Image (cartoon, rainbow, N blue to C red; front, side, top):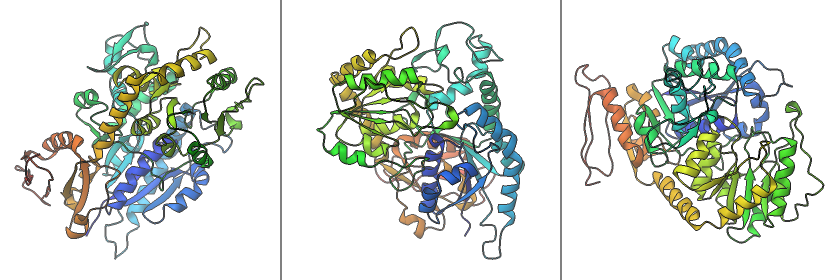
Length: 519
């Protein structure tokens, strides 16, 4: 029997690699063959994690075109290097894999679908030329993806310049109905320069070659964006598991024992992800501000990177007697620890998802890209956090940090909404549906997958593939199947098994849903 073979290719930063790795693990658990492509540079940084994953996922590498000493936090530089270096090598890699079949495997080893994240849309051009289906898995919010899709409209309406992407004038706009108002200066590409903007325009066009656009979100978090853009399919939340995750730095797990020594909701957690750089003056204000809280704090300060020329030192006024500082954190465990009171965050989407699933209030400190959109959702839509304000010099001062932490921890409404949002998001896993897909249509398994779903017995009992998806995604799934397959007979149900005929008549592609009681 033939099983689908996915080549999964994330953009080479942790915020993209971890969600795509979790997605790959789900597919592998359900019998799919997975080849996971990473850069040679990252393979050297992640060797222990790769070895730990075992035989379920096969890792392959390609060079990123940069020298070892180059600063890989310079995203425009990385994007350009990948675009110039990888397409030909990717084409050759896919051909080598697809030609490397033996008599026992038959065609089993051939790649049937390429899954990529944003910033490497050119990879779908490669797969398209080879006749291989493709999908985008966007590891951030549907609203931020919609912002890139909206670029032509924003240009036509004179809101942004067609060459630079910068706003033509200062104003607030609403990207989508029911989405928060946002300053045009905070559009995701504005902080990253002209070349990045032009790349995003080209990249978004290339991504349209993808058969499916998957988003690491839920219908409860972003109902407006998902309703407005029906091609976006929510498959979230995809979070790194305790056993399958990638990291460039060793986690300091001693902080978990330290947290155990503190009462519930007493510790302020501070982390700015894997890319954000805190300049020295701002670093000093943050350090002193944490001291002024007179509360225990857990602060993640990444190991210094000589390539980005920023190496912060702690100010003389900083004592840190109530805090613990670590180089890298087991963040999911931290955000689910009862001692955590709030999360001072850069508003990266993966951190937000983990904080939401922990029921933690946020103090928002966005740096660039989609982080400003994410802040708007936290503060203005979900109302589970507050924003930190800069002074006239662009600094967030120590007094502002102290004031906002006190306001946040004293706001019982925000705490209650945080718990409620956690329930909505975590309950996205509760009511699972089973979908049986014939191998000839196996590429449809990229829709509506929950990463926590265990392998089903149906995988063993049925000569096809079993995938589990969530109640909140079922509407979007069936709407998509109507487009892809024609008619669907839908009854009220608790569970559904859908059999796809291997070669259905071209004029009557009907999917039957077997009713099983009232939903």
